[in-house]
Image: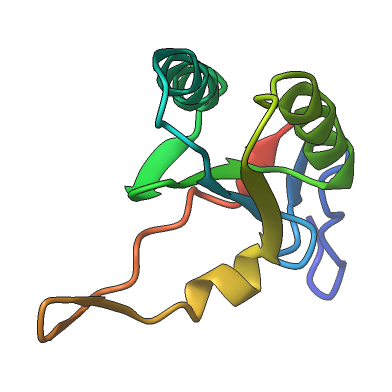
Length: 124
């Protein structure tokens, strides 16, 4: 290669850096009744559904999952909607990866380090 010649970047289809504003976190928060056996069973079934879908328990009745964009988020929303219990409240929040980085966590009286986000480098 001669001096002064630019090196061509690899095609964007092979490797790309995904934007922290495109990557998202989904938080599902719920308050489900558990006063009857049937309600308790429905709540357990919904929690198990979230775990099966790859959500992790963040706090009691708060589950979180990483997804790689609006299309994947919409797919999860359709599955969540099909799995909703008959009663109770379910709230779904989304945060961009950049917003998630700024969440401040406390455990007891101590501030905790932020959770590590998944690597943003994706191979295509």
